Image 1: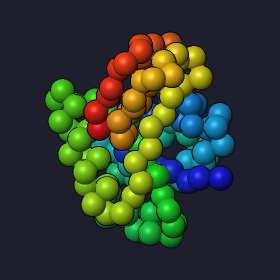
Image 2: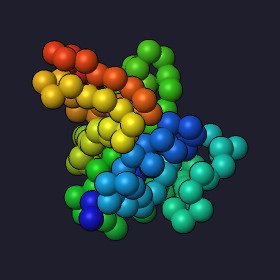
Image 3: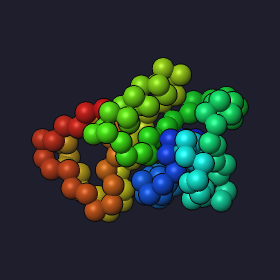
Image 4: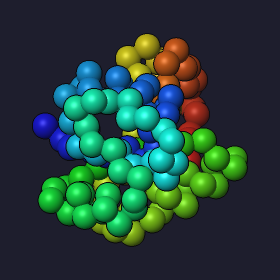
Length: 127
């Protein structure tokens, strides 16, 4: 079983959780900078303090992550993705069971294909 964490605790995190849990992944923690956001998963700890979150993650080896936030045209997600990669964490991508992805599509690092999405032939996504 692979362990992963989510950066962001709102709607996108719930879709990613569903997609990854169905494939046997285990969520070990969530970070959200907004302390008014409630934990969507009662069995997983949520952190609002970045330093405490990284301390929690230090107990694990070979961790994967997904960035589950909105943001300014993806720039925020890329900055967070790069921060987490620089700390030695592994990026993953999620494909929801209801999504359709062409066999020749190339999904970039950190891509997320959510509910009922279609990724057509010859599509290449970036990080």
